[in-house]
Length: 603
Image (tube, rainbow, N blue to C red):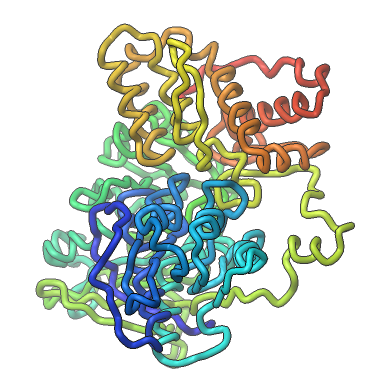
């Protein structure tokens, strides 16, 4: 599977759709059902791209074999911490699930709670499941397949028994839609895409440096869509000085990627569009000790400055990996592009070629010096594709083949099943951050609805701990706008969206935040966590299994709830979970110990 890597054009950005109970996918060739429906599941999985932060993409199609292969339910995962695709598809299909086949582009990641994909499939009476690819994360790979088979369901993994061109194409679709997750799992860095526009004679600007515009408006619209599919957009200092970019999605989706500037010396202008962080955060990565006074200026504007001992693209990508990023778009000049390629962190290239000739001996090219002296040393793209966009041609291809994540040794969980004396819970320090991490269920963003009393002591259901936490900022405020904020947060489609809404309102309208928020926010979070871990037995067991270990919320940038990049964070979320663990274990003396003094943070 290592070379089943495609250069598909960026899929069309669609508006989010709800689970549908039927479609016009009614194939008559029984031998093609599996591949065709897996490809459809992969198409569905891509639907939320641009609307939410990048996340593992899941799509589900439920078809009735006896009905000529008619699709009776389909859906996709909208965002991290939202209702699984399989749950939505089952609800759409209803009673027609009995004896039906479920097609999944990727093995589900959660198989423990009542609202999980696995539980929904089993309870619905589905008799067969076809999986496009196994889950690429080692701590999740094979778990759902084993759980389904143990309940008597027939589970087939596409391509593991039979190979043909149709099956290969279907698997390729599954790999492409989750390429960021695959590269992240294998390379320990986010999936990195280099994008540039050049003239027919290979220039990205005139000799004067003028570059607006090389590509057409249609091509620039496609770039907005690419940004919407990324966690962050990276440029170098030269781009900031010469172009003063905004790096927004504009006509793209709703997700706003972070803007990242790499500059060794911080020779940057004091005024720039990127220093306006009212809507989109900006991070400046620089060499340790560079222009301290300018760092303070950026900090005063709300720009986050991160220092590195040596500013190297690989170190920066390692840092972004620790932040949980899946996908990064590089829109830099030739010098930084060459450094990134040489560091081995660029996985894919999008080159927009405009039918223009600018000439110029000193006009810059898209990639600087790579140290190659013979054409035989040239880097060749894999699985190249070409697409006409207006007058331009988009050339896309991969610099590195898709990782082959087929396990050659048993995972910790598999080994534990063979030898019970080997425990997957041996670490003295346990980190958790993203919901797909081994202990991701500890996150306040995980999909575990809770019921908490409102001001009138009536129970209200919240989609996640984060939904509830953000809403409590505005409880008790007499202003009607505050009440409307609470309702808006109740309806937030994902924990990510709830956090964005709550933080934005707190930043832009601080008068709507309850006056005692800083003094009670830790207690609010603790009550919500306690409700979550006492509502779901398997979460309770998971938390208790960590006894003796230090729990650390692994966010490198949240210094209040997280542990920080170098352990400088206060780690309140980890501390609250350890306090709750002690309480559940009955260690009252430990659970009554006070936390560190509170600090005023915009959380």
